[in-house]
Image 1 (cartoon, rainbow, N blue to C red):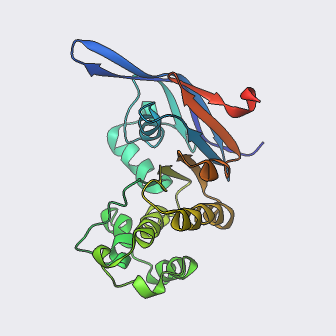
Image 2 (image 1 turned 30 degrees about the horizontal axis):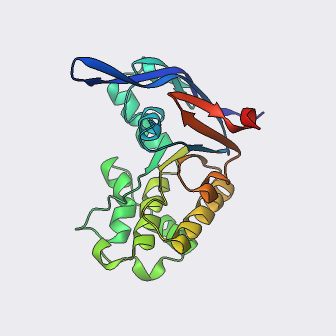
Image 3 (image 1 turned 90 degrees about the vertical axis):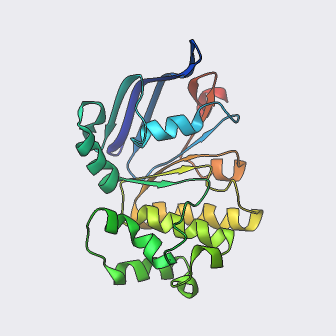
Length: 228
């Protein structure tokens, strides 16, 4: 077995619903190995996005432990968690969330700008060529197709070469052709850059690329291997 890059133990999460508490996640356990792709499926509203937000440090669980690249996140201060988020984590949302007043290149470079890191233009150009996006480098989001916007969002997520890429329903707003392009892109990122990936999805074609496949059902994460 390879190096464990992420491990979640007994993660629980609930939300206030008036005077009641609505439990969304109960005793979630997940291990992600370096260079691995994990996919998570489940019905809408079952808590997939909530789980991904917790695993990526965007949200905190009510209970449970989370370890990323050897660091126990639940024991860290907020500025230390921010450092892990900036150096170890990339996130792709269902909606691209590109900044409209910045070009594709500038959007891709945004994590460097936020973290006060030097811009390695040759590295960004190399990634842009890798995705065949040379022609749109200086275009603004409004000038791009939906597929191009999502691929720019993926490049933005991996520009710092994170240990883990999280993707929340990344093909949800794409047609079949662009969804297939994005699926192949995730596989290439995983194999070429050794980035581990966790994806939530409704798309069975996306789910099939996972080395491990899970279903989130009734607040529990179930390994599909146990359902065969």
